[in-house]
Image (cartoon, rainbow over the protein chains, first blue to last red):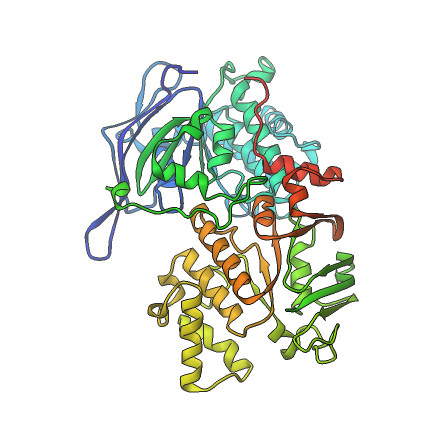
Length: 301
Length: 261
């Protein structure tokens, strides 16, 4: 479903200074546009996939050098925002509000000393001027939206009192409560069990398709019309990504080596993509020994 | 070749039965898998087997033997004893956490030899070099520190450390879940080759059904400390499963299914 771009990335580069004074580029000229669709970014550790996501959010570690020809966020309201040159306050206002990021492990990304409900309300306090009773209602609704059955109870709990799957749902609720237009999910299910993984993906799927405000228009003020949001799904799991996303970017050594419609994945042409697909053991199709990925110097050039 | 027989295994932590009356058998030379979601007790079973978890009940015994006398007279009896550990070694999940960060590979591999009083000086060195060759690292890696190795190389060191005592039984706790797919393939191939070469018995724990069926001939599905189902790898591959729970796990492993579009 190609729609007007929400995010335009052109020639994005992220480099970190080395001890010898040089710069090492970990993202080397990534370009793509994102509409209100699901885009997967797949690659192995060190391929630059997470760094790409963090650069878009403006969460790159201090000291890094981020550059791009274009890094523009075109949300609602017409005027595009140049993410590289906009003032830090504007960036801060966007982050968590109109663009949000779900991280890998709820154990490390939720505050251990704050109740879950308070953490979710904090997002609202930062981004929307609403009364505390509305805030509380929105927080409970957000928890209910991610499939938590007793939101009032869970809101009172601390992160260590809930399971991994529940923690991850709480984090998704926190990211979605302000109704973002762009959601970046960096390995949102890797720390979870396979069965819980599917539930979390199901929730993301529902929310992305409906738009975060879609199901309850009119109930809450300040929420936009639900017309779906843009999702960037970052993962190392090629199969999972292809079953969930519309389009997949395959990254290798800081570059996008292949872009392919998820449904066409089995027609992938790049040897790296093919190698990645082949080296996974498959139920019902035994291969002994497993084919091993033969890396080619030319891929990283 | 050595196998295992486990009868009524129980492990209790603070009144909570992590493993609750579990019985299974691993034939000599067999590769046996345990699957289940987190909290099902699958890792605790491995820890109990090698003496790292306190037994609250049940028996673990080695079967088959080098001496050919059935469930042998000269088999060690006490889980966790030195003689026991000679028979059974474990490879842990996280190669970033299971290797001492300030020990060189040489020292990591020398430690089991020192504990068990095997060899001296030159002989030990030869054994370490051989172990490194066997896991495909080569002796060039002997004086490196773990932080100088990639995840796959670290897991190879962990495998070399487990095998340097030449135990007939190897316990594998999610040996590839921290690794990239391409590296996972290499490590799985290595494990398979080593098993064929040495006639090892494997007990492998994983949450990834595809990985377990790749490496194991038979597997046990666990939930809440109990066995839900035992089945052959071929049955799983052909989707011949009996319980709903296993069915659920299988569907989950097949990936996300989009409803409508």
